Image (cartoon, rainbow, N blue to C red; front, side, top):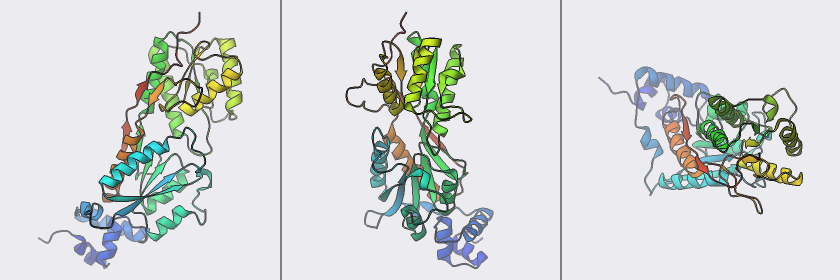
Length: 349
């Protein structure tokens, strides 16, 4: 019996072997309809092939290039986590003999009908064999990417069935922070989040971990103690959030606040200090990410995210997605670890 290989697929579909090979590799130069036809025939005939040969190359060969698209402007790097993710990506790419091409993109301006953006040029030309997304982008834009090139998302999840995700287990991490505050004696704990123009699934997951933590301990959940979590209410900026926190402290005796991220928590400490509230003497605050504190601010009690491990895992998952473009979607969650910090203390009597 004749073995199922790319030549057999080419004969059955009346295509060239090169077209079949590129279709199986999800090459953007091949029409989506043709790629779908080739993959459908390959699945029907039970084709397995040797995808490793198309991905991993010897040190003497020219490395293939993967793109890294970061959803922030180049100037917005204060308390950013992507440099640590990039370290992990670069280390794994070197080990795999891959080249990386990094692009920065304002998320709000990346839409399917946008023109002349560098990322589209790289995809159209075939310069990139795969792509890693860091931070949220619009669902429609990500779906368009996934139709043209193998895609893996970092620190955000999407609805597309072939976009894998590598993220931190933030739900469990926030839940652990609630338990930590309760162990210090806090019984009324609030939640603070910011809203962003694009994305926000990670904020929703962290809010879910907060609610889970409260209910698992039998503590009160009060929607007025949570900021920027309800879609049908106006978005509050940092200063109004601080005013609301002070009001809830005075009227409802809320003694601790879980912030969805470190950069939000450090901003809240600054705003509360300006209003005469001392952390942790008057209230306790936790963050999430484990970042180094800005100058003259205390180290945040937080959960440290292993961003380099996430970057490493993203490259490995992208290689798997490039080998099997239509494999079931995978989600990899990397565990975060506690950072002691100095922003949690027992509540005042």
